[in-house]
Length: 243
Image (cartoon, rainbow, N blue to C red; front, side, top):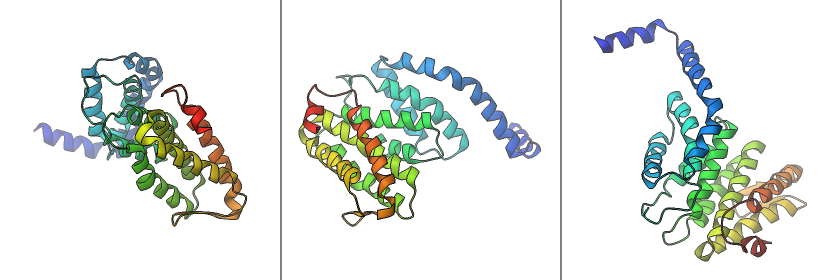
């Protein structure tokens, strides 16, 4: 009987009205989020693990409800993982990284949600304590392909976001050092080549920027440099090495 009542209600109220009701409740909570999320910066390991599971359950978001829940949860998650990793946390959380990259590259998410996704990517990669280099494989297999897709057809907004994410991942590699140092060098050289080329640019078989679009690409690369050197993690000398 309860299930039948829910079906009848769904038919009585138009979908647009239901969405308006959800967004109205959402808009009441959203202004308080910048004041609530910093409280999770020094949360316990148990809270962090709960946040990992919650974010993983929402990615990728398939419904409007999940997108709204992700919008509320992701800034809190970004604050929770921004501190030094707990030595008792032995789980590998890098499977979240490609999914968070998709959130950042998706124009449907607002700026605050994409910013939280970018900060989460940087924190998870910087704090990764497993073997190998998670940064280089992410740049090579996912982000350069995303940049190539943004070139043909030309999508300046997505192209700029992709360069920004390459810079954030490159900064994570620089902060990590060791096995990730090569990825850090590759990211900074990629951005330098993108910013300084004066004619058409062809990077491998993927990214092709025509001569008339070079000024826009150069500005995007210059902005990405700021993201790279603005990272606040790592040791005291990684910026000097990158310079």
